[in-house]
Image (cartoon, rainbow, N blue to C red; front, side, top):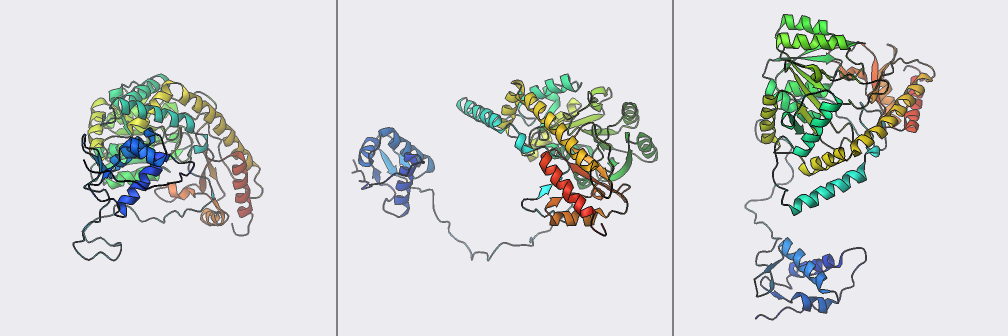
Length: 491
């Protein structure tokens, strides 16, 4: 039997950090410096504990940590030894090292995206975004507890392997119940595919629907990230105007009579960016038109939960007997943007194909997170959070509207939306919103001119002002700065 190495350690263990980790780091350091060579025998856990003045369990944990990291190896009944293959080794250079990162690739490639001025992050700025939730309201502690519980339980049951590309079955079951009961849809778990947010859902949907040259009708003004996705697959965008009753279905029909329209993308619940709701009569006309011309309707219901004055109108997908609607929504707007859970539902064969495609680019989502969210839905926590957020966003909508109504000087115009997370605020034509946005940025207040939401020349001089992510105090300050800029000469 080899004589075990004598540690000769007399450590003083620091408070606030596990002792077994400090021991494992001391031994790893001795291996790095060469004092302990590969094959060196180490004392048993009882002897190590005696030498260091700790209990045996601490010594056992230290060895287990070193074994897991690869610094030590156990040889059956012979004992514990320094590993013959250490985890830290220097690779052998086969050529002179590159002098630095290469900026221009040495191969052919194509950039399908239009060149845009990148958004410059301003630390500490107050941002009127396009309508995202306030992550400060998210049920972080409850979600973290559920995530930890699911992770531990699945780990014990050896259930941390691959899952269905459609996503976690418990969450699809919970979503199916919610969609059927609250939104009038007719879904099953098999007809739902989970994604990492609505943008991924749009990408997958466009992959299956579109070929180069296909025409996609879009709302104008509308949602530019969706337009970029459709263009990526070679689609031609056909703008359809929006008025105070939503998408102009008569204009869409005229378009269908002129050319083959492959798909229509729209946001009927709270139109992006104008916030208007598509009227019931137009919904009926739209579904009939889509069935007649074979148009796939991509319905993006991004903020269904937040409707303040009356019962929200059910989605188009709730009254679709012809199977023409692909319904996309998300839990990110409900909880927090960092929670990347979106979903798609539609005809069963289409969703099956969507799942197969999703498996090629992202084998599955975070199934532990999906299970945790399913648990919170079943326990009623998501509904409780929704009620709390609903009341807060209602308050913030009214706070922004009140501040804008009392804005001195240049008047602004807006229609108070029945729900959602933003106002569509119109300015006089002489107001240069690009210059206003630049001056506000210098004051650390960020707005996005509405011209960014138009495919052609804008017909309205407006700004989409998200209120959900800002407190009433922050909203008041932002509007105060806006008023100050508008009162400057030349604004």
